Every structure is written in structure tokens, then in C-alpha cells.
Image (cartoon, rainbow over all chains, first blue to last red; front, side):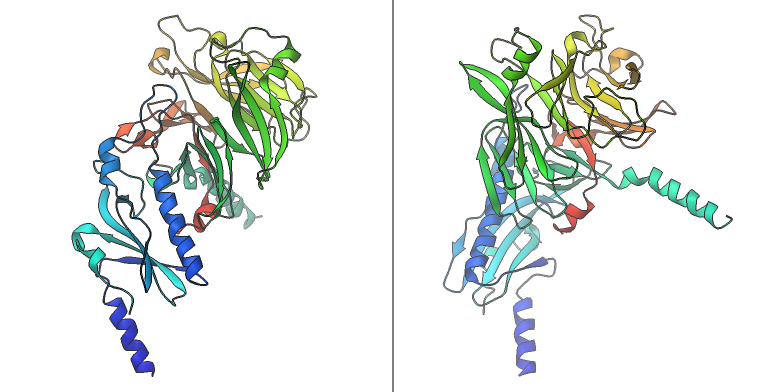
Length: 139
Length: 321
């Protein structure tokens, strides 16, 4: 039984490319998982909300920057809930533009498998896995 | 005694350097002391609490989020210039707006962390108390830009009665600073900034040692077309003004709007220019220790900064790893 469990863990982990950084957010159930992921989506949307400075009316975000940062919608499937965003991260943090120093285009994914007690936050350079969104993580 | 001396020396050195471990905050962007980005949050003005929750304000809303990014409460309104906390971190000091008889004026609010309004007052009330009739402009009756609580003061200081912990200091462009009562109802004292042209100042705060520091956008010695800014201080125990920082030549440092000031320790002052960046200045050596331009970068372009502050956010950030 332990060997089967170990194999399952190894199999699920092997779905993630080697450069992936994973953080686990504890959740009690599927409803909470959905809330957690939606909150993260709302956070990203608010981060890139356009404003203008009150002195010179200059927009905070250029169109190019907003176009370059994609925030994925909440995607509810039979066995999973997820959101796949592709963003320019700096030191692993969103809220940056492509031409800024030290930024990298990365996947920022929130993923929950039915029955799990965690939402996974996954960060991964886009170049390392261009088709990351196509992978299936839930067994 | 032999054992104590190295310990005292070590403690002094540790405390003297402690500001180097602080974070710089411009709006809702948290950086390290060198201006390297640590984490960004939504909004124009934020305050970050030790339990990992945070407040975020902009021109449309004031929001309070948990450490899990859950929206706890939201208030609609126009929030501007600053969002501060009382020194116990239990109340929120808010600069917002009201439109009365088709003209905008400032409204001041003290909220608890549940979002309840504990105290509130319109700027018009203060103008009546000081018998000021001239509006700030055609569009605005008043233009206040900072709102701080007076902290616990050092013992033995001979200060005016109105300089009392729990009262508030409000700064108004062109009208000077106001000390108001803790319920926001009464102007206890209003003073103009004689060292500033037309009292064009920002970020006035009273410190535990009884000093009032502020950013002086247009120093009174400025020529009309060749103005300069300075960082000034008034010792309220003696009513004596001092310039903490002035560039050489003076006109090399001019911030037409905005500006923040803060003592990091007895020797170092941090101040921020509207566009050029953030500076750390040694009063003893009278030289710039640090010139941090990254605090003002948004993407690859410079963006106006109302003020940059150094805060100890170690506890807050521990919830956001």
C-alpha cells in the first residue's frame, strides 16, 4: 500500500517540470479552494488596474505592459479548479513589465484537484514549458 | 563592567544600523532599503499590518484584505495623499473628500480596523474655526496632504498644551499645519510655515522629541523662477526652525509637488522627491548616504511618488512568503 502511494506521489510530481516552484496553500474543501483561487485572480486584476497620477494625469501602466501580462480566468472542470496566468515576474513576484530590469515571463498557476487539501501555487518560466497549460495534474 | 562594555557597544552598533533592514514603501510597492522590489500590492496607498493583513486605498475605494487576500471590507470614496495608522496600529487615519455646494473639500476620518468610523470632520469646520474664508482654488476649498497622530512624547519636554499624544497633526497646502483634538472636532492650534513660500509643504509630523519635521516644497528664500525645496524641522520646545537638508547649489533640489520625510535614526534622514527618487542623508557628515532611484520606477519609467517611507515590515512579510 505504501509503495503504491509513493508511486502515485512520484507520478504526480513528475508532471511538473524541474524548474517549477511550488507552494501549497492549505484548504479545507473544494469551496474554499475555489475562493482561494478566485481571490488570487482578483489580486492580480487589481494589481494591474489602470490609474492616472493626480499631478500629470500619466497612466500607471502602458498598454504594452497590460497586454503582456495575461491573467487567467477561473477554470472549473470535473476534477479540478485552476487559473493559468502568464505574467512578467521579478524575483517571483507579479506586477512588472516586459522591459523592466530582471523580469521574466513565467506561468503563475493556481491549481486544485478534487479531494485535495491544498491549492498549489506553481511558478515556472514560460520558456521551460510553453505548453504547461495542456498538462493534466489531477489523477 | 569588562563584559558589559562590548555588549553595550554591540547593541549601539546594531541599533545604529537597524534601519538598513527596513523596507521602503512607495504607495503599495514594498522594496528593500536599496529599492529592489520585494512585493507589490494593488492600490495607490497601502498600510501593512503585523498580522499579514493590509489596507489599500485609491481614488475610488478603501479596502481591507486578510493575509489570504480575502476582501474583509470595502468603502467607496475618494482617498488621496496618504493612508496612515495610529501608533498602536489599531486605527486608520484617512484623507478623503466631500463635495459640498459643488466644490471639493477635504474630509478626515478615523476608522477602526472593522471599518467603522470613529471620528469624522470636514475641512470647512476647521476653516470656520480659524476664520479663513479664502478657498485653495476654484476647484477645491482645501488641499490637505498629511494626517498623523501625535505620538507618545519624551519625558520632560516643555511643549505647548495642544501638543499631546492622541491629538492629530494635519498639513494643508497654503494654510499651514493644524493640531486638532483626538475626536477631530476642534482646531487646537494652527500655524503657518514661515520658512515656506505660500506654505507649500508636505508630510508634516511631530516626533517623540517634540520636533516637527516637514518637506518644504518651495523654501521662502526661493526666487520666483528659480525655486528650491528643503527638508525642515521646527523644535516646538523652543519654536526654533532648522533646515535639515538643502542642496548645494540650493536650486539643484526642487520637488514642485509631493515629498516625504522621515528620521531613520538620530543622524540619518530619509526624504523623497516627487520624481527623482529617495535619499538618505547623514546630518552629522552632511552628505548623501544613499540615492535610491528605483523607488520611483514603475516598469521602466519614472512615476510620481507622493512619499516614500521606511517601515519595519518583517512581521507583515513573514505571512507572505
